[in-house]
Image 1 (cartoon, rainbow, N blue to C red):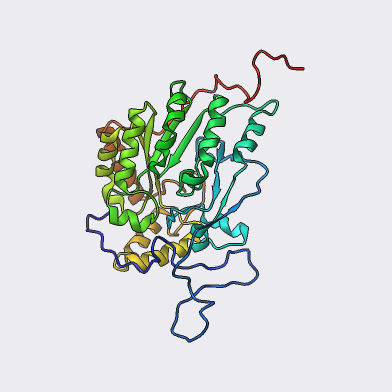
Image 2 (image 1 turned 180 degrees about the vertical axis):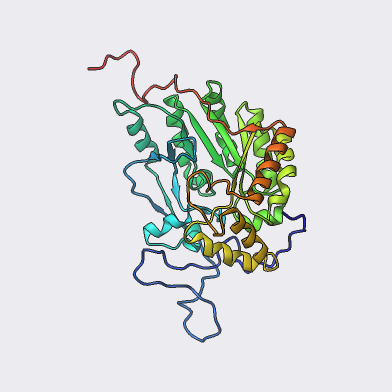
Length: 363
């Protein structure tokens, strides 16, 4: 926990968080892009002008299922693989290794779009015996990342869910969610929709180096205001909380988001599974070399001496004195500003399989 001003020592590429692009863990040979003074044709050097590329995702199903006791939903939809927001700590980064790509810069620049997601969703919701439960939208990568402004896959998914009167809970860092306020407000009238804005910092400089292509904190506060004004239940997700980086902001952040219209709040302590550990340490060295040792020591204090503990019941909040201090501060600040716990109380009673005529008899 620190109240020191943020100093930027970044060596990041403009608009990118990761500083390297090492091969995925499943590759037989490992490659690491480098920058050095050795004369050559530059083919092995780190590209300083990486462009975002989007390829089609060929998934044949769209609803992902899970049985984790740490999260209150058992199904989710992610319209994209990879995320242009580029958050260095994103726990979805290791998934790019399954595609033969790097969890580093590839994750931010080589994206996959599920163009057929709305049609796949319609098919899955129409299956005989389908039982509706809340679908969480954007649990891995952001459904409102910049490319959705053009592709509008998320809006088309919401149109199917609205037609079926199916409950949905959205997590996003983007004010682009306001584009779909017309759909969400109608769903909210029947207790079918909630939105959670992920706000990690009120400091624009810190936000920029943590989440290079995500909207500024001010834009996110404006999104909370807009959603609340449209009658859409909105909460704030302070994730991740990073010891000695953004944890000093807990009280002010909750105060600001409550003032904007948020009604609930929750947090997640920084998680560093698989390749994220090395990427995060690299990021610390580039941006906060003076704090690196302290940050890593505090993380280990909350993770039983390691940088990550994957055990259920511990991975989201950590353990130990420092983790308890964070939990107590968050609880007290939430109570002070009238923010309840994040909840998943949405209705399933209105569900009707899309495209089905309620007056038509079934065989």
